[in-house]
Length: 508
Ligand code: NDP
Image (cartoon, rainbow, N blue to C red; front, side, top):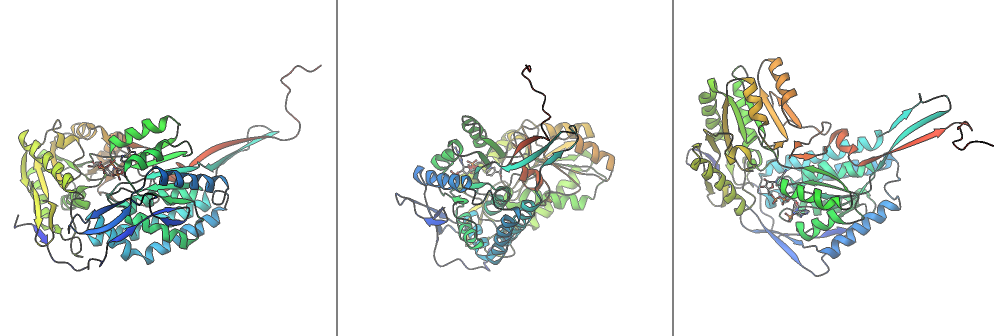
């Protein structure tokens, strides 16, 4: 453990008191009617950092009623795109003005490093700004070639009331992948963050009011998946659910939302491979593999938790990744130098540990790390950077979402083998290839089953470029114009010009 780069000191102060997170319903912050609350201890420092109102059916019912009437009376849905864009742009400005407070809260509740939180919260402003541009440029379709006396237009209309359910790994960023796009489309929303990371979502309520979003257009309810999330996915007045989280809950939502035939968009897990060919920029590839597995302590749907490396270079490449892994700064999230922080809960740490132990039992070899990590003066809810070799495709560590800083190494000889290994997964979120031969890159990109393919890079993302998965990684897309379109319904309008319609009933 001593040859790892562990950061113990702190450069950012802990706030003097825990944040009080409250529901935001019809533009007003409020407690639960029964006064219940939940508390969040910081994963890294083990101290109380927030107390949140704990919602029940009363709060979620009130939030849905508020969103429904805000949608139906047109206070937002019938505004011009220009007016909606002005509000969304103002929200983006306010996020940037408040980035320090948001980032500190994000770090305290999630355990991620403060530098990363600043990047995510500040970066979310760009998602709001891009969504604002879509509010103004959205348009449907026209048909002017249907005949001399007929024409048609296809209108895009907001789908209605949208339930937004988000997880704990990127609370403010994932909210930004959904909420501004739904609002840009003219929808109204009910939002539920993870009960582990409710505060930055709650803080957004104030910014929405200050930006001039009409009351009732966005409502935030804090609480657990049951009952808050389950009511949000079954209620008759909700038209669409967009969810990011585990595949298990995603499948459940698809079933329960089916009763009222709500549209369901899901962004679920991944077991994302990077394939490494000998003729690539190996230094850069090793760096991207290191980034891909440790970013957000691997608690990331896009984590590249398995690499498929060519047999000829496997030893040297893995050695280089191990060397780089030792240099990544793990430790105190309140230190600006830290790159990788704490694990979200102790139970989750135990789950990660279980995957490593099972892999070893099944014959894999741990070449770096492999266990929990205690950071002096901070806490023990950390996990070592871990590299596991000799992984075979049948092992759980090669197939399941570990959601931790644990890299599984597989090897290949031919392109066909690499593609077969990459596709040998129930998931299909993202995949990558490192190779200097454009033909190999193109063939891989076309044959690999994934929503996003990166060639000679990893996890570059842009508000303009759609994101989502195939197979059990989800359905629908987020961000980009495709993500925006998820929140729109299509209405076809067919118009006859003049009294030219041929009667169906035989004339006298
Ligand atoms: P969950 O899928 O349980 O949680 C995600 C969100 O869904 C939370 O807000 C949660 O609420 C809510 N939720 C839970 N149950 C329901 C329900 N029945 N109806 C509606 N909403 C519900 O993820 P976990 O936090 O339990 O993480 C477990 C695993 O999921 C991780 O180890 C990882 O593998 C995967 N995961 C994947 C993510 C991704 O980015 N794709 C993100 C997070 C997790 P609450 O937790 O407050 O009860």
